[in-house]
Length: 317
Image 1 (tube, helix red, strand yellow):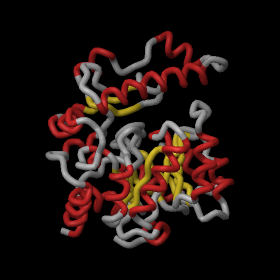
Image 2 (image 1 turned 180 degrees about the vertical axis):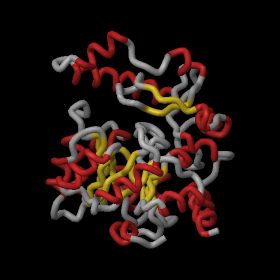
Image 3 (image 1 turned 120 degrees about the vertical axis):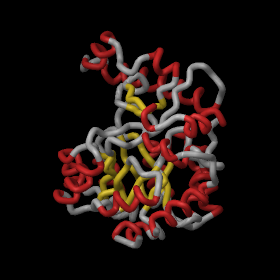
């Protein structure tokens, strides 16, 4: 499984444990790094810069392996400037940019040794970030959990490989070694894998959330714009069904207003993130759990080490 990506980052397997809002914690990151893959966590998982720095310090106290940070780079994330400054100062191995222009991140990381990987959902944007100087793209396909794309991995990976010179990291639809081999054979240089790790021993989410990952299947995954205004995949719980998956007419009008759009999106995001946090860590009838279709392959809660080892063994077989 050694390739361009493993040499670039310095890992055994071309896999990133995907950054997952609220879910990714230091225990998961450390376990991933010590078992041959790399990992990233969202800077927004920490409320203060001190907590953010403490998390990086904790990981580095346990392992010398490389890891990254996910930054939301649009204007609604008012913590972004400080988070970028911390990443630069502490020299994380790589930054994953999402939901906005990565230009500033790329420019400031140039010459520091910090790699920049950019989430993309179409060829046009992928070509744009390549021109800006991105080190790789993360091809968020239609099977991804969280903020998913619209193009299948079978179409998206070859399209990007044909038109880009930088590495392509496929995000979405991988939970087994067989699926990992399929994505790499399509041309992916690496894989960003998230959902299956939510059901890990190290994951901080509630047992109810983990049980849902086991009991629900791929057919129970729906897309909603109710959380942040952007499409997000969630488990179709009774509460999600009652809530609906599309923003209202009033919300659409506010979203299209140039003057109000930024404030409305921020308000919607805060409301949605609070709902996700309550659902992830406590029992409530208002359950909104993020996940991708790969929950179909989750049958038990296992340590991160076992999840990785099983995937590698299946890949080799």
